[in-house]
Amino acid sequence: MVYPVVNAVWCAFFVFAAVLQFNDPDPVQWVVVYGLAAVLCALAVGRRLPWRPTLGYAFVAALLLVSLFAASDIGDREIRNEAFGLGLVVVWMATLGVWTRLRITSAPAP
Image (cartoon, rainbow, N blue to C red; front, side, top):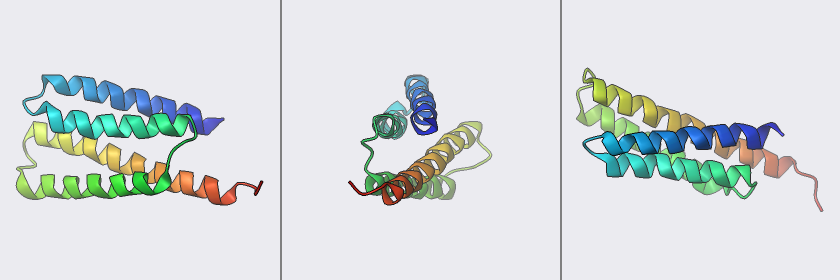
């Protein structure tokens, strides 16, 4: 019962974050980042989430986060905000991937 509710909340958050990016100077990449996270959360609500692509996306988002830190001035407010949002994506996608994997392995056999 908790699994779909928590993922619905995160899905709504990521959709909201994606919509906010249309006001950003570089909206496309951030709409894709948050939009894909929202899609994965929506799949989790319907219990159709593949755990491997979710962990893969967490890894890719983590690489994006590292490259953002390496290539930017972290003192810039916009960069800090982007890093925080990307960090949320990394943490939740990793959590979701592991949570889904554990649910699959602990499910009773048919």
